[in-house]
Image (cartoon, rainbow, N blue to C red; front, side, top):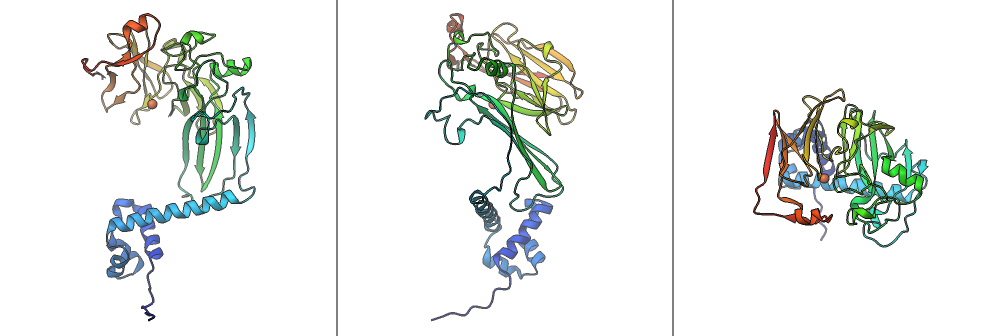
Length: 356
Ligand SMILES: [Fe+2]
């Protein structure tokens, strides 16, 4: 038996289109079943017939967007010459490819710097979207002196900039001093995170010592520059946030070396200030500092820690900067012998310092 249903006046795509418009213009919280019915002129019963709940409607909208992106993306991959890449530079590498999990698949090192000015857009970029999306990656360049660790790769920034409905891509290595020295030497000069720092041929950077300052851990925009930083503390490197042109180390660098700046400094959006910390094996073990919106160091004080610690982040409120003293650090007895073994000391309290 063939059932002839009534022709469906409002199909699910029409309803989802209306839902997408409402979510884009007023935010997902403003999306209601009644709003979709009103926008399409459909009886609310038809909306509920196709999407029994608001959650179903949102879920279907999400899945439809993902499917549309994936099918468009796969078509682009199949097409020829869709992506116009301008290779700007290829760095010298001595890396021998192997099956290391952090050298293969999505982690395969990239040694090419390029621009892609005309990207194919699947869907539509809102005209009003102006700005940049920055991300960092770690790309090993040279065969390690010892063992490779995923944190040892040299920092590379990737930029997607959006303006007037267009987008552009660029990627650049962060040309840290250690990176440039190894480019010149044509091979590794510094140890890795799981090597004995003595393996390094030069003193290196970072609280642990012997490491290259990869500036690969964090990227943040302050005073118009992308600021790339290193988890073990190093020099703060600046790249133009819209072009990735290299702008050297921050102008206040000499005032904070040799302890440097840790990854995960914070920009206060109210004041434009950069709040940062560093840590070291020698007293006072930690500093807290503030760079104002004009890129000048205006505050730099020691933080009273009982010994070397391994802080990785900080926080702030409207009135306080908050620094951490956590019971996870290098075993002090082994450290005295030059060994870096991280131990957890649950009997010690976690302490927080607040700076007004
Ligand atoms: Fe981190």
